[in-house]
Image 1 (cartoon, one colour):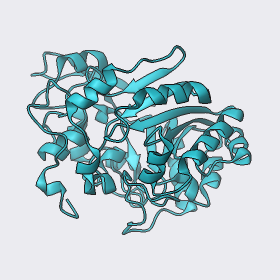
Image 2 (image 1 turned 60 degrees about the horizontal axis):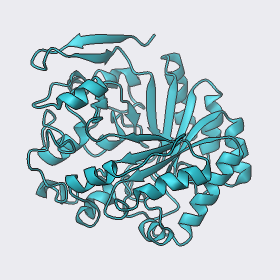
Image 3 (image 1 turned 90 degrees about the vertical axis):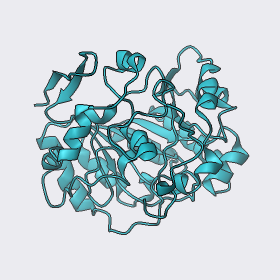
Image 4 (image 1 turned 90 degrees about the horizontal axis):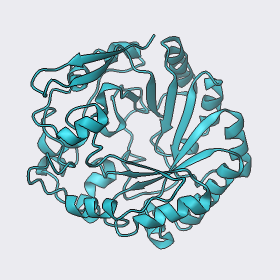
Length: 349
């Protein structure tokens, strides 16, 4: 059984932080392949150095999750629907787990949407790099990708699937965020998620082309007007949480990575070699869950019940796991988010 414990950490204003004896949800990065060639691809699809888990191996892993009391599995890629056996993997979850999928939606037709509804998929999270068709097609490297995504979302909604629109905040959309709200209304989507840009994969390689300053991010978010019936999800001040206490993720090759945004930085062990919960007890994994940070924003701690903000961006910009998260104005301390440290600009940081 998953047990939630409140643990006091001295040096953090006596705040209680959450602690799990084991996680209840997990992200499966099911593939490192995609039908597009996105400039912001975190997985750098097509560059895999190790083979992906087979259908049988993923099914064995799903059995392990069910035995250990997991409740929720979140699939992402790459593009999950590019994998030919993905629906077989979904079917194997057999309503034993709540299923959510992150996708570009370009491969979802009416028939597939109905199948997904029948398989018990709870929600689709659809990435849209820009609400402008020309810019979206340019960023995906695929002509017609915007129209295909719109069609996929409409098919999903017609089948009764819930859909969240995702926007990775960048130079290409920060002046058009309100358009995501308008699209959500027009497409009957109930959520919009504004996500930070992470220095991973191709996004890291082309960082200066895509990133903007923290004040530009803040101004874009403050200007948003959220329509009635739409829920906005965002992780900037005062909602910059430290998610490591509950995060769990496995890469396409079976490596336990804690969080998809840590995929280039950690290796807690392979689920092909050891049970997942053994990787959960990895010393670094435990350190990150303890939330022992150098500096924390009191506003974010108050709203999120956690301390220190995102560890992935903190480590990326500072090279220390205990460092402050530069995406919060209270802990930015002069970091220019438009420029990456030189160590991240090398091919293999």
